[in-house]
Length: 395
Image (tube, rainbow, N blue to C red; front, side, top):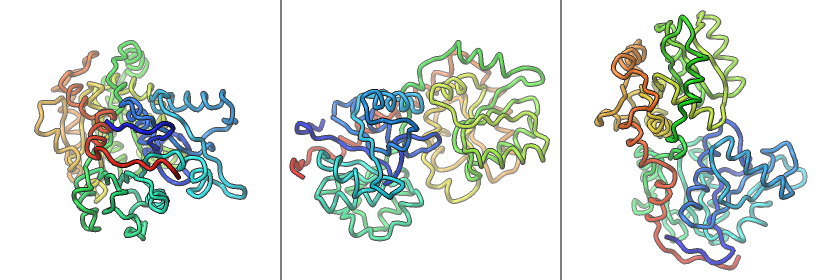
């Protein structure tokens, strides 16, 4: 494993201007869990993000510990890594690469792991090694000066492609194949901890007549995630209560309007929830739904949520897309549905209810299938891929 000089850190940072943490932001979940996984491997790590995540001062020791508590509540990570809370320069709204980050973080960076090509560019200009993660986000795809990232140079330790489809995009940009590693997003290992008392309370409070089954979806509430299909499934299964956890206020308002128009009384939109609440709900459910609308985004989707679902032990019904094909070849408590076929989701849900009745202890085959995809194992594979490299000790 990598050994760093004294006072040098493995720096994890998402996108220029991002807060340290915020509800419903997948790349911030990635950053917090990557930092924890790195520290668990014994590599000194620093997580950088905007201090604007907090409505209280964080410049004191008490403020820093409050930031750690916020990260644990939101994402289920413990603070075994250092924090860099970044402030904007005077007159600016958010921190920038050339502000606090350049002055206070880069001088101590042995190497940087990021999803932002602009941060990669800053590393290149200062000859700091880096790992670039490409998750097919809009700000990544719209970045123009790819040649300036020097992805073929020794400074580039690795380019992480979130799926095989993203790897194909990188190869088309002439990124050397030897630099690319395909890694799914990870899952927090705490999702596997059993929560029987909390799950029982959820079921007792939610499953009142006329509802006999509990279907749960946790994740983003954008239309591309198949939320419309979930609404249609709810209309087809009136004795099943659908709980949808996630989303922002504007999205939720739109879906609530649709629920009213279609007279759906068996759907509950509960917004974004902390990591522990999500785990409780997942273990309380009769089935967990990984939905996706028809469209090209499904081709590059990473099945992070599927792994979390598997660790819960609850049966899974998932859209048949490239990211979920692996479920078909395993003896799991799972069903696939075809999002191009109207009515296929309620069919798959009904089949799941029949084949896999609720078990408080969960289905062991699902839990075991999710274990290889925890964040620490993901980071271990990445560190093994990059191997040893020379570390710059002066800035």
